[in-house]
Image 1 (tube, rainbow, N blue to C red):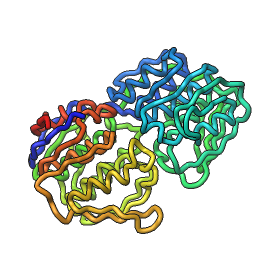
Image 2 (spheres, helix red, strand yellow):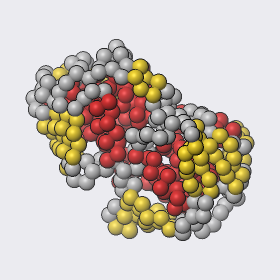
Image 3 (tube, rainbow, N blue to C red):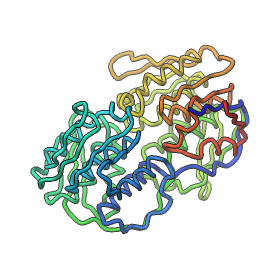
Length: 407
């Protein structure tokens, strides 16, 4: 691992030029483009490693498809290749082999795919043996696990002779990601309807499109944290933020409560520091990726919290709840489950002379805690982990005044 030391800086001003395009949108348009014949004109695709992998693997003729640590890529491509009739082995890193995929595989098997596990039952690696034809157009899948399972099934719906009806059971998490997929299928000419717990996708031919991918709100969220934590701050984020498919744009609403206001000026988003509230209650069900931005921010701002909707963090790149608990402990902050699904957050009660952040092979741990460098020196265990979603993050920090050193 290549460690990084961030020299503290309390004044943060400038323009963030390297903000990436949305990884979530990019990965969806790549699958939908493949299903429509690889004929779309796609501009501003994300430079994230996950999207680069998707770009290469969706066109791959190799039998073994190695998605590394990219969960979205694993789930979307498993569904895509499952209906293609080809023989593929889907594999990834050791951590990927610990991330469950059985809800998706169970549904694909019902539809007509022949899929076998090559290791532990319910987990990658797996082998897609072929597709015998559609056996059913109705599947049931839990709504509270990962919306990526649901989106993967939705996108293959138009390619199935009888379409697909997906019934979501239980609580539905990350609803904005499902709505994003719905909107993008429609953009490619598909007919889809999502109401309450039922998604109906009609069979039909998708069309090519010309589309420019929007900036990534998850990546933008880290700059909200820098702006709030700094003594003085004024940040400009270029990009078309006017119309977005992404649920994480709710960071603007959270920001108003934790000390930062965002407003649009032409093609830029302007962030300004404002007074903050002393407490925050938030349901992260629809925006789980923001937890690693918001909790470290609240820790140093002295904001106590009551949070729900964190369940899906257990099955991400790492157990993100455990990772947050361990790193927040450096400043005496705690995240404790008061009762099932309800988490009580207590902010920092001490500030050490410096902090050393373990990254757990998780890009959001590095970027979520980097804003602590507005207050104290921060060492990041693995500087390269950001390549998964935001390759230019460290350069953007330097562009607004931070000094970064090899550690």
